[in-house]
Amino acid sequence: MLEIRDLQFTIRKDGQDIPLLRDISVKIPAGHFVAIVGPSGCGKSTLLKTIAGINVESGGDLLWDGRNLSEDGDLQPDEFGYVPQFSIAFDELTVEESIDNAIQLRLKTRSGAEMEQIADRIIEEVGLDAIRDRRVSVLSGGQKRRLGLALEMTTAPRLLLCDEVTSGLDPKSESEIVNLLHRLSKSEGRIVASVTHSLGHLDLYDSVLVLYAGRVVYHGPPSALAHYFGVAFAEEVYPALATREPDQWAASWEKHRQDYYAAMPGFTEPAPGTGSSRDAAPARRSKRPGFLTQLFVLLGRRWTIFFRDKTQLLLQVAMLLIFPAVVVLFALDGVPSLKRASETIARDVKDLMKDSQVTENNMEVGGFVSGLVMFQVVLLALMGSNNSAREVAGERLIFEKEKLGGLRVGSYLGSKLCFLATLVTVQSVWMYLFVNIFAQVECRFWVHAGLLVLVNAAMTAICLGISAAMSSPDQASLLSIYLVGFQLPLSGAVLALPKAFEPVLQPFISAYWSWSGIVRSLENGYYPAVDMVTEATLRQAGLCVVVLGLHLLGGVILAFGGAARSRWSH
Image 1 (cartoon, rainbow, N blue to C red):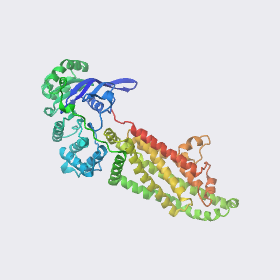
Image 2 (cartoon, helix red, strand yellow):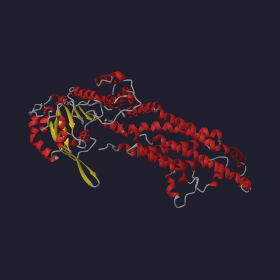
Image 3 (cartoon, rainbow, N blue to C red):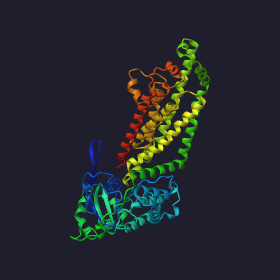
Image 4 (cartoon, helix red, strand yellow):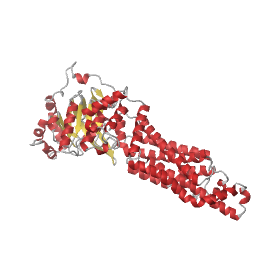
């Protein structure tokens, strides 16, 4: 049995406490199908989230099979399923792939055959067998709701919480979903609580819970609903609520609650030593998959989505081809001067600097080399921003739902870091190789390519942290673009920073440390030529590696902190 006693939930807004739930007290026995209804903003979804542990109650008690969740901890991931209003599957995956992933993330199975058996049972149970190979992106609203239910049935939960799963559906689809929920409630003593605006199909529910301004104003059989509110039809209940104050309706219900509960099976207290065998049965515990299992499942899913998302795939290919080509395009005029200068620079730089013509040539080469390196660095910083700005924020609600189902934050971010590390390495090494074919600026491979990888990785990690910290993908993208936009002007590579600001700003500019380390390690005397045309302090490559490593670490820490924080909305 699920029992709620004097439950309260309050939020603080603009310096004031706003109660969203007030003294909620209800009982729901095993094998029960309950509709939670009421006007918009009455607290229906808030109640469901509080039961699920998404919201932390401000007062009162939640009891599940006699266990006080307020004192003993939230429901375990295998004990309940929560189906939110939004889609909880990726458009690029098929129905079967979505269910397989859910099983692999939530259940520790002995073999692939066992996983397939569970998937087949669930697909048949929710009526998705005919479309199991169809991608989520082409499913109808009703089919997506069925899929959402299927994902939650992977652990065969004894408590199923459904938030507006019938909203926006046509009458036929709504009827099919309500009938499906009714069937699910009659198996394994499962409680199904469904938040809905619709007052249709009430005959399929065992009880109806009506909320009004965060209070319980009715919880009884559907057949008595219209009579209790003094209306002819159930659809007239909402207008009737407006005729009295919420406190008056709540006080009236408190007077009649025991009478209605006594008339419904399973709502009376069992005699000592007796009780429902279903409630008394020990809770089954499904073993959660290990850290690495979850990581590799997520990593495989991420690569599948990457190759099926044609827009993102084409963008990545375009950047790989166009960005290095743009660098080379701007470098072509400087390559002849670079080659001529390399012959003279190598002889004796100090003597040759006395010659004005050589000095002019070397200043030209210095500007060219400095710009060429910075161009590579800034474009890789832009790639890093594109890599991860939407990586967490773009799937935040799905991630929150999977966390609720037992997904480890470490496994999730570990899969993201593995995926992004591959992109960063390919992008950076290709940039180095492509540009170096046309403009052979001599620098040790491991220094030049390594610092390009590090600036890309640092920016990718920082933008991943931003993505995890922001509440929307648009906010994350905008902030990441601004961050990249400041890299060039604040690096000091083009225009020197005021001396008072240089030590304050440069430690935070990833592009500066990559550019500086590469330029400082140039061979054949190119470094003195660059040093002639820049007023920025050029650092040794070793220090630059350390600083970029700290940027990378900072981004990862920010990502972990942002991902661990709950981002459910009230």
